[in-house]
Length: 338
Image (cartoon, rainbow, N blue to C red; front, side):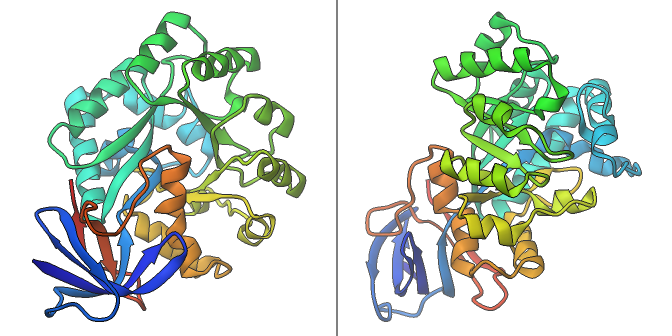
C-alpha cells in the first residue's frame, strides 16, 4: 500500500493527515504520520473539475492563425471565425484536437469537464468519439445547429447530452431561446449560457430563463450580481479567456456579494486546458481569494453545481486525488481512482 501525507482538503478546509491507497481505492486515512514513508507530501485535494470548456476548437491552435481579439468576430455564432473553421474542418481533425485536449486535462488532474458543445448532434458525436479511450468524465451541454428552436432537434440533443449550453442571449431571438429553456427544463436537464460577457445584458431576461449556471458575467452591474446571488445561480469564471479580449471580471465585487463561483478554461484555442493554470492566474491577478476558496471552485463547489457525485477523501472511497506543492500549487502527484 502507498501513502500520501500532508494537509487533506475537505469541505470544511484543510486538516492534517494521510491517505493509504492501493488498486484505485483509499484503504486507510488518519491524522498524524503514515505508517511508512509517503510517496508524496503536500496539499491533498480531490481531482479537479473544469467547469467550462469548448474543446471542439482545439484544432485551431495548430493553424497558427492570428485570432481577432473581438468576441463577435472570433466566437459569436454563426459567423465568428471559430464557427467558420468548425464548418470547414474534417471530423478526424476535430476529434484529434479534442483527444489532445483531453490528454492535457487528465495529466493536469482533471476528473471531469463541462463542455459547451457546438455543431448540434455532430458535435456531440465528435466529442463522444474523442472520449472513448480516456479515463475522464464529461458533462456535455449541447446546442442546436442554428439559432432557432426545433423541437425534434432539441429532443435528440437532450437524449444524447446532459443538457443545453448556449451562447449569449444577444445572439438569439429571445422567443427562440425561451422555447429551448422550457424544453430543457421539462426534461430535467441542465440549461446554461454565456451572459453579459461582451456587453451588459438585461438581467430580467437572463433570470427569466431560469439558468442552472451562467458563464462570464464580466459586464454585469452590481445590482445584476446581487440578483444572481439571490437566485442561488453559480457563475463560471474564465478570466484568462476574458483577458484575451481585454476584459476582466470584478473579483472583489463577486467575493463581496458572495456568489458561488466555479472556474473554467473556456476556448481551447485560447488557453491551456490545465485548470490549475486558471486558478494560479486568478491567485496572481486577484489576491482576494484564499487558497481554500480557489480550490473549492474547482472541486467541491463545481461538483455540486454540475450535479456530480460528491468527493470524499476517506476510507473505502476512490483514490481520486491530486497532491499539490503548498507554496506553488504545482502538481506533485495524481491518482485518478476509478
